[in-house]
Length: 185
Image (tube, rainbow, N blue to C red; front, side, top):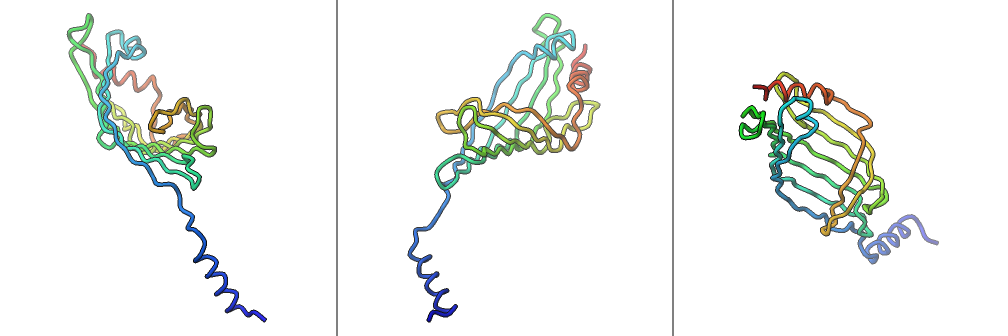
């Protein structure tokens, strides 16, 4: 008759002979962003031309399930900077600018995997911006979204709606008013 000692030894032998179950390797990569564009909504709000320039390095980590399905993504941008400016060379431009850091991290879960149309659960943590006369736009925002596309390297592009915020997040109207005041002639 087998006793507990024999059953435990048998179980350990079976486990030792079984292939190890491991998650697929995590993928890490970085990319630089250096883009400048006209900000039509902010320009209309201010009454003079306003442009936005985003610069920095984004660090991406993709985490996979045992079957190779992408389940989670972490994107961090510790040296990311946004500059709002009104070029003196543009008609009505003021020649002024303001810059803000945005050292935030975006955590995204893909419960069904990352394919076009798949659901996504997002949490943005950290500072998103700091404009004059307003406290830093910082804290935690969470929301739900959908995968819009997947790039050739396997990284999904998502669109999401903020469902919940904790911290300090002013309205878009207040943020635009702060930018306009800082850039005004």
